[in-house]
Amino acid sequence: MLLAGPLGFPDVTASPVSIPPVAARLGETFRQAGHALYLVGGPVRDALMGRPVNDLDFTTDATPDQILATVAPLAQATWTTGIEYGTVGVRVAGESCEITTFRADRYDRVTRNPAVEFGDDIVTDLRRRDFTMNAMAVSVTDDEFVDPYGGVVDLANGVLRTPATATESFSDDPLRMLRAARFVSQLGVQPTDDVRQAMTELAGQLGRITAERVQAELNKLMLGRYPRRGLELLVDTGLAEVVLPELPALRMAADEHGQHKDVYAHTLQVLDQAIDLEDAGPDLVLRWAALLHDIGKPATRRFVESAGGAAQVTFHHHEVKGARLATARLKALRFSKDDIEAISRLVFLHLRFYGYGRGEWTDSAVRRYVTDAGPLLERLHKLVRSDTTTRNKRKAAMLSRTYDELEERIAQLREQEELDSIRPDLDGTEIMAILGLSPGPLVGKAYRHLLELRMQRGPLSRDEAVVALREWYAAQ
Image 1: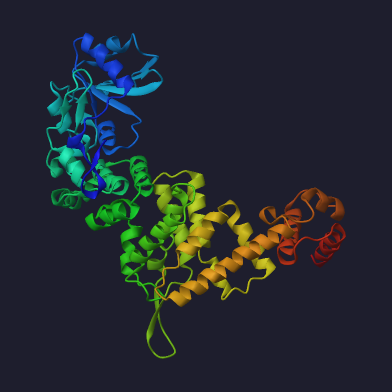
Image 2: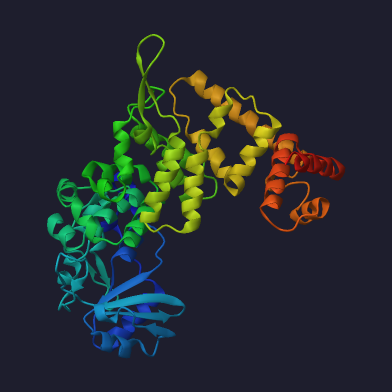
């Protein structure tokens, strides 16, 4: 049983790491072959924290060729895609494992790819790793626990520290700075002052990292337990200026309601509130939409004079600008087309609710709201509700009540008509037959006209739709 230490982390000195059965089998095989084998990095950290251990990573004094020969009797499959870096993949008893020869790499500090050098001992191998909590190892050949850089104490205290100096570590591989923010989000750890300082001084080095790797780390951060903390670290150290400049830019824009210190603080609060509304685990699309929903405000900020002569800040159409900026940023980060469209659509729609004042929602407006949101409707509900951060309790209650009424209206209309798949009462084939048209632009215009009628008036009978179509055609 692990004992709770500071910040809820286990007092790992009170209990050994239990060795997974597959690791024990591999350990015995390597021992018999005369080689050392260590379970290393994330699996050790997660085991000490009582978290599920999934991927198994090992390091050994055996060379790649020796690894392949040693695992041959146990292996269900092997792969060598990482063999140039000393890594051999092997499947044993249904478990995927990666085994890497001890390394003592050198970096050119131009790319993040090391000049691979095999090492002679576990301590040197652990020093090249990103953080002390990932620089612990357990020998699966003789049960030795190896922690030369104090990872146990750092883990117990919730401290994020590097085995080598932070400057050396991040200069070798700048991606580690994003990993620092990711671990802050996932595990709730706090970086040491020298880690923060090095991140600040070396932020520009992130330009060496591919967009795909940046996206992967940002997504892991966003899906963590404490994404706000990770994002604040990115902004405070200047890393966000490199990978997500729209976020720190929000600190320059005052919110139009005057209830928040700035739009940046408002945005982080919206993210927190969106997370609170998740009901089926972390929702990456919702979280990104919450983070980006107001990024159009700096570009649309205007100061206008009110009737009393005082200056008032406006952000007209910031949702339109924000959707464009979100699309551009997500494309630059190599997000998938589906994610880009979904996140940008939510940014574009997040103000639609406020365009109907105190709830004067016609059936037509409700139909448009549902149709424009499409499969994103439930996420839009959560985003809009999260966007209420006013300290005025009466106003907050009024907005919540108004949105409750909108959802009730949606439910009522769903009972009366096919609200989630609105289409014209006549399809293209029927339109051409009734009007004697061949396929072409006019058929499309007729279809859109009938769709507009469907939005305004609800379902029409076939006779009513035919009359409406002929009247429209005559006017053409």
